[in-house]
Length: 263
Image (cartoon, rainbow, N blue to C red; front, side, top):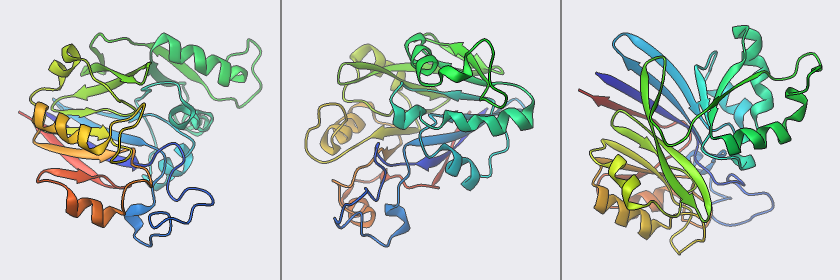
């Protein structure tokens, strides 16, 4: 049996919530569920007595998220794409390098690794400055792969014209920064117990699903549960949003844990 425990470390957009200098109802909310760090999830996966701890995306709030979740080790970081709200915290893997005594495995497409080599050039120099982060770049594509014999299925989605990867592990799938999923890739998302989708607002958006689009996809794919993440302050406050959603559809919030078991 594959058991997956997903912890939402961040459920906000690239600016987080509250947004700097914004005075809207969401940004002024006193509900802790309306305080959203940049999107990231922690996966604890157990299969045949093997336990693997994975992170999907490491944005600018990576340090704070690791401290809040009391993370002391990671078996790998999966990157969906190269945008800074998903990669901007990778300098702080230095702490994990120190405790583990080895580089952190970074699973991403070649294009994303190339971006990291530009953004973190000091980590890839031949003569490195002492204490720079240590990355072990593991190249993936749309081909299924495994980490310590835990199978992972990449799912190609589109962030406007930018190719992005979602990931399915067991009966759980995580999709962020998507506005389109082609029919062939939707086949990988059938039979899910849990689907996580990005939703930025109710009205159409160039590069993210709107709420009506996400609900249409929920009705098409029919997962048992749908969690909405990468939420912006253009949606209503958490309590109002939750009350407006159909059964088995939930707005995620930072710190929320979701269990998913596959027999």
